[in-house]
Length: 162
Image (cartoon, rainbow, N blue to C red; front, side):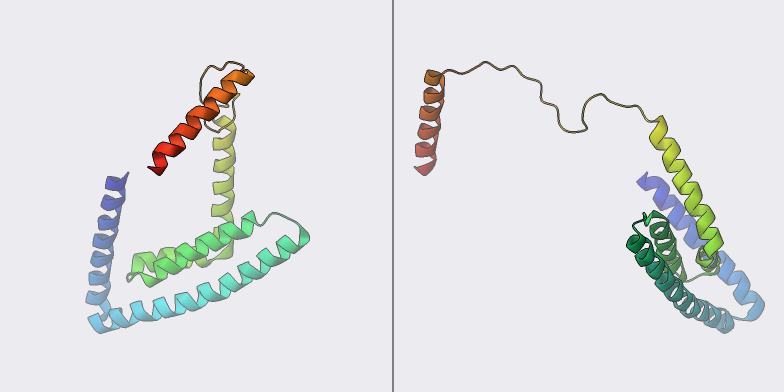
């Protein structure tokens, strides 16, 4: 998994560099650099406004007693979009712009919830709890056995004190 992440990361950087070079060749290096900075600033402003709307909707949803999962998913996608806006490049900015659009976030969120439900329904069920299971044997202890255990515990405490 880490190898796939690294390959994807370096491929994205390479693609961003290629696209930036092509845009800079077309409109000039300074213009391409300024365009990257302007899209980052404008994008963060848009994400901030959308984030405030999502927070307000989440508060209203919780006040009604409904589940805020939908709003949390919107917030997640807005956080990803904000991260992409801060990364320099035109590809990440394009992805961030798409994630800033509410209907696209809605569609992606619905597909995530559907996939999660499908995964939850198809996973194998266990008749046991999900906690730790320790297999062992036991015997009922009488009064004399309990006093023997207490003596052993007292001896252990004395050894620890020494």
